[in-house]
Image 1 (cartoon, helix red, strand yellow):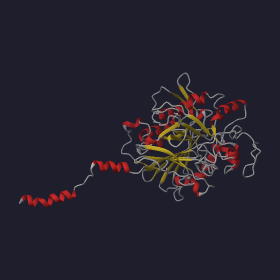
Image 2 (cartoon, helix red, strand yellow):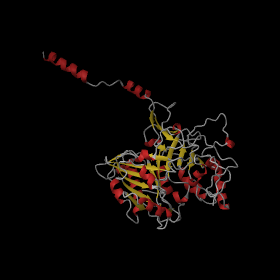
Image 3 (cartoon, helix red, strand yellow):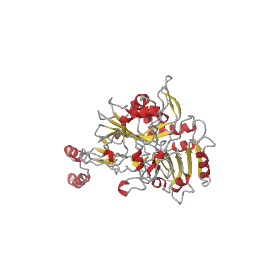
Image 4 (cartoon, helix red, strand yellow):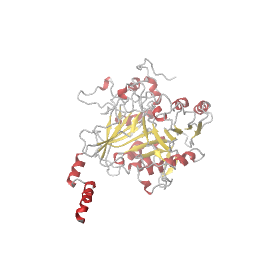
Length: 509
């Protein structure tokens, strides 16, 4: 009788119990699952005079600052237009947001400093801060926003544009945004904070970067104290920064700067290609020396670094010619933000060793007609002159996959990356710079990063089931177009008589 009475309850338990498929069936489901897709962690900025098809997935300053939940903004940059900055905030709260502007105009009589002081008179909620600038030839070149919000969240935006309308209009630029960072239960850093690319390590390096501003005066301490309270664990990126001054390579500093900091990051990055292509795309080439010693033995040697392979990459440098400046959306005016010098004998020697590596930004001039069989992957930025700076390691010469991508304010210069190590084991860096480096393994297992064109979303054709496919939004077309024999880089200190598309010549006074 008892057995019969218990039968209904046994049946109920069997019906309510979870049912697992046989092991073989589970494996089939994993194997047949489609590839996963992740949008590019870097975005391009919206270009005013390009059509919507060239502005898919792009971002504007108003997109970043227009949220009415923003309560405080720290704006770090080289050039600033405060009217333009304030106009980007939501109109209902722009007078209430606490705005801190960090600049590098340290000379009392500097026109840039006087202009900022005059602009700030209109905005009682703006506080100006002058960065400590110990190096004579250094600049405060970092481009960053730090936002604190009313919903107890914070966000970091690292980008390539000066805070002026010109840079956010028709110039090619890039933006990296952190996830919204919540408050954490306590401000202590986890033990695993030394693992490159995780959020805890990013937090260590980011706060150390901010501390560099406070070496002689109190500037960023209030921001540091706030950010200590936030949880950075959702960030998957490595910070690559520069701060002015000398650093000892043997010191036990938690964070290294300039090329030493970049090397520390790349030592943790696994790479895949035996014949990699490293493409350096910048808006300025400084004085590097009459021979290639610094470029080859310092910066390029660092860019070769990886966790697992000792390969010999081929290097390319993307920089526009005068023809590409003439045909850009702003014509010759675009050239005011793009710099290298080619006029003196010393500068000519530098150009001589750079020339074999130089490639076009647009590469669509009449003298460089593409082979009819060549498939051009169009990034949609030919006419938007480059102020963006990217350093990309492609896995091989097909450039179909990417081992790592760096978006930064740092151009091709000793001031930005640091001099070669001196006999005392020191590196001298002159400028403040900031960038973010990402590689596919940070974002998931079985991950591949591939170039995307006119969209942040990568295609998945031909990818394996279960693979994570990450987009890397490209600012330039592929394949690259090398300089021809008669091509020269644009030089803003040289006059050009040939008219741009607007009918203007370029003459220096």
